[in-house]
Every structure is written in C-alpha cells, then in structure tokens.
Image (cartoon, rainbow, N blue to C red; front, side, top):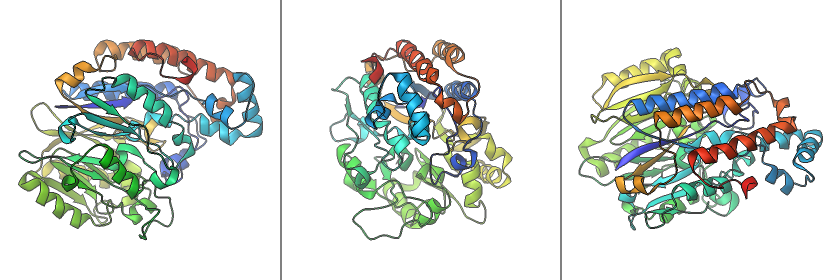
Length: 440
C-alpha cells in the first residue's frame, strides 16, 4: 500500500474574500490583491517537489466558481451574465461567497480510510459536508461527483454521500483526521472534533468549533473502522480560540510519528498514553509547549500544517511553508524535531504564500489516499502526477488564469465564462468525464 497526496489545483477565482471566521490568515488578508496564476503554479511546483522526493502524488480539479447553480437557488434568475450582474448589485457578499476558491484545500474534501483498515477491505471515502461555512458547504456535491468519477470501481472503492443533518453532523474532512500505524500493529485512526449538539462540553468562546463528535463517530461507522482502534479526541477549546480551527493547524501525524502542539487536544497527555498502548514502542511523538512555540506563532507560520512524508528509504521528511523558516520559534522547533530520535530526518521549506495568505499551508492543499497497486491500476482518470501532466497543467494555467484578482473582479460576468471554458478543458486533460453541473 502506498500513500498518494491528491493536491487540489488552485481555482481561477482564487481571491482573498476574508470569508472564514476563525481563520486568522483569511480575515487578515481579506480584500487584498491575489494572484491566481501564481497561486496555481506554486501548487504545481509543490506537487513536482513532493513527487521528486519519491512520494506518491496526484491532483484533484477546482470547482466551478462563481457557483451559478447556488446563485439561482438563492433567487437570482436570467442568463449567466444577468445572474452575476444582479447578484453584484443586490447581494455582493453572496457573490463573494459563491466565488470562493477554497476547494483548493483538499484536506477538507473528504475523510478516507484505506482498504487495509476497513472491515469490507474496500477503500472508503466520504466527502465533507463543510456545514459550518456556507462558502464551503456548497462544495460537497461536486466533490462527491469528482470522487465517484476517479474512484469508480465499486468493487474496490466505496464513495459515500456527504453526511446529512446540517450542523448536527458538521464534518470538515481529513483536516481533523489522523492515521497512525507502527510495524506489527494495526492502524489507529484519530477523528477529532470540537463540539457536540447533544453533549455538555466546554467549548471555545471566541471562534466556532466546526467538527462535531457525532460526525466523527458517523464517519467511523461508515468506513467500517475497528472501534478498538478508533479514537475521538476533542480539539482544545483554547487552541480553536487561538485560530486552530482544524486539527491540522496544531497537529500532524504520519505513520509511526505524531507532531503536536500542547493546545491541539483537550487531553493531549492522555491521548499520547493511549497511542503508546495501542501502537507500542515504535510510536514516537514530539509536543511543542506554549513556552517553546507560542500558539500564535504556530497559527501564523503553520509548522503543523506541514506535510510529513515517508520517503522510499523509510525515513521521513517535513515539507513546511517558508513562513516557518522566517519565524524563529517555528524554525527552532522544527530543528529540534530533526535533531531528536524520531523518523524525521530533514525539513524542506517551500513557498506557497498565495495559499498561506488565505489560511492554507502545504497540508491543507492535499488529501492523503492510500492505494494498493491493484487499486492504483483501477483508477482510469489521468490524475496521477507525471512530468507530462505537470507540463499540460502548467500550460493550462498560463492559458486560462488571470494574473491579478481583487474582490471587485468577481463582479465581471466574463470571469464565470472564462472559468467554465477552463474547467471544461481540464476535465479532458484529466479524463474525468462530465463532473460539473454546467457540463450536464
């Protein structure tokens, strides 16, 4: 079984709308100029780098934005151009919400369990309903369509519908999911959560907790995970209030290794004890204290939103945003990680500033999917990274993407037409078929 990092292509409407309450980078950069072409090319360069390390790499497509289907459901009628013009005039905020390119952060696209861990020995995928934020909740239908197109073999893959139930079963995808495994032990799945509509818990006071306990429990049932090896740790309320809206802002795990901030989980010491019991001596972890790495620095520089990757030689490497190199506390913490006795041997710093400015680091940009050779061969779409695919996608970006984007540019009716033309061409490159509503 091999891990593939399915990175989201940054969409043509990449902009800083300041839409995500609790995401400090998003609100800080709201209204500033963004650079869609540069953002997409930065993402592609990250894919090239990860593939060059010998790690499995693949790609997921953007979503159609603005979402004309959503605007019509909200009462705007007429031609595509008339819908956008009226929305810009009467409800500009709705136009910004339906034009968000946040689907680029595919860590939120779905939760995945590999066939090795499930009772029916199929790979299970559940698209996240993302109910907490409207501009993300409108992603689920298209995500489901895309995943069904890629993982079409029902004998090997189970692509579930997003969880029902609105806020009661609010699900944020793999951003709150961690899979850990050591030699000689079955994998342990952590499905973290921040609130419960039915249980009396101490929650955050400043920012909303997005994932519910009930959603995490439902995912474990759907994916047929072993209850004895599935844990449901609560996100630390103080961490959420400090800007750690998802677990992957303050914790990242890979294989036998877990790296976390002390404000990642409500009972981090208890969780670590349980993991050692279930995973044995092969499990290692490193915890950053508030004194060593203030959570405000962690949220600003995203050392825990790095990718921790297993290399072909069995060692691990961290792919971190360049902001970690520029933030002394984060850099020193990562240097300590490499120096101590654990599988991580090196840190690489990459520039993904266009994503970071909107609140998404390297880990946000990828969905981890574990595939056997047979499962890999069963995927017929052209989504697995190769130099040839890279060149095709880079040329596609340069052809279709605008260089600069301001919020006011979303009011241009021509932008929607440009995006549909681009995505129609992209589905041909990726051999996905008609996955978008405008193609049907």
